[in-house]
Amino acid sequence: MTEKELKAIVVDVPDFPKQGIIFKDISGLLSTNEIRSDVVDKLTQPYQGKRIDVVAGIESRGFLFGMLLAQKLKAKFIMIRKPGKLPGPILKTSYELEYGTDSLEIQEKSIKEDDVVLLHDDVLATGGTAAAAITLLKEAGASKVYANFVLELGFLNGRKQFSESTHSILKY
Ligand SMILES: O=P(O)(O)OC[C@H]1O[C@H](OP(=O)(O)OP(=O)(O)O)[C@H](O)[C@@H]1O
Ligand SMILES: Nc1ncnc2[nH]cnc12
Image (tube, rainbow, N blue to C red; front, side):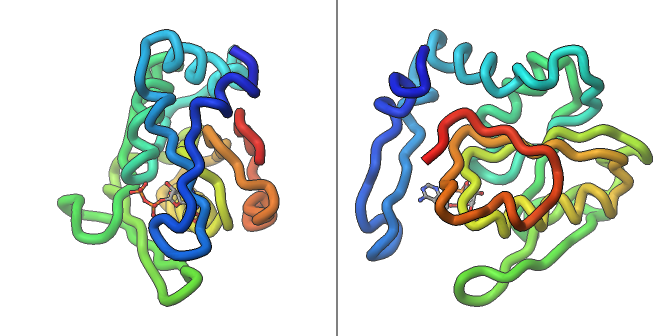
């Protein structure tokens, strides 16, 4: 499928979840085997022949394709979760939101020293979430992190929040 065809499946929802936000609803990309396979092929394309030990998905929409990427790349899958969801011992990092702070957690032993990690989320917006996740993965021992997204809101300059090699398939 072309980028244009895939973009036509993503629905713009104005003023959700707050006034002034145009929410990109990726639900349609989950709907058929054909679409899912095409998205997974495009997301994994840059890593063919490269070492990926672990795919880390960010709660919650990062779990959806993240798990399929791990299956395709024959890698381990781990969850990066919002606070208080994972049994310990955990590693935690806090980050600034537009208004206030939030944090992300992983299980301490989920990454082995020197693991190469593919970080996956559905959307790269301001980049705050991904930057915090990268900090966490490096703290846990990852030697290299690749950042990977279905959709990137380029006008928010999220890539500027981190220096890791970044791949997204639908650019806005
Ligand atoms: O680049 P940023 O500005 O940090 O925004 C991107 C994050 O925002 C969304 O998550 P949300 O908090 O809506 O959680 P969800 O996946 O559970 O819906 C999205 O899934 C990313 O994780
Ligand atoms: N505009 C948006 N649509 C969907 N998910 C998002 N996460 C952050 N911004 C978003």
